[in-house]
Length: 115
Length: 111
Image (spheres, helix red, strand yellow):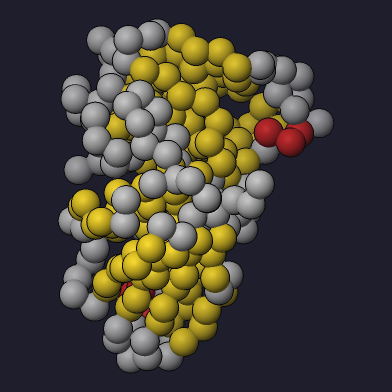
């Protein structure tokens, strides 16, 4: 079974450029999560979707960040314009949400460097 | 305000011995707890979980203990193997799907 797929694995861009990160969740999973990992803040939740609908975006740092999930098998996280402080590893995770089981399955991450 | 804390950034254990990783939480609404393992350049991998209605859950070499009164959980790995060397994260949930993660503990198993 394919796990969560993220692309690209590495992204290097210049400040001010638009960055789009992509995620394909595990087939059949109905919840999708975007996380950011930095040395300072650890692993923090940015936004999550249930059945393609954004449920909680309180972790999105500012309006430069946006996320979409147009269908059950694809999601994007966009940063526009990017800034050096956005440099981090961005993880996508998915889960099959039902009461009592909250295990999330993570993709390999996208390492973003903004110069 | 860090709701989930792993106070030991690193831990070194001899192969074959027991590894004990600790995690404390402050939010009494948390009712489900998970441990993840992370290798370099990979995403976190789910390891084991426990509901607040239990105080112990075991899966092979891995056992998670929950002490609700102390707001403390621990992960025991017995016996420790070189492949267990990784960063371990504990995470907690308060009924919604959101997980709050600790900062992680880097476990090194020495041969």
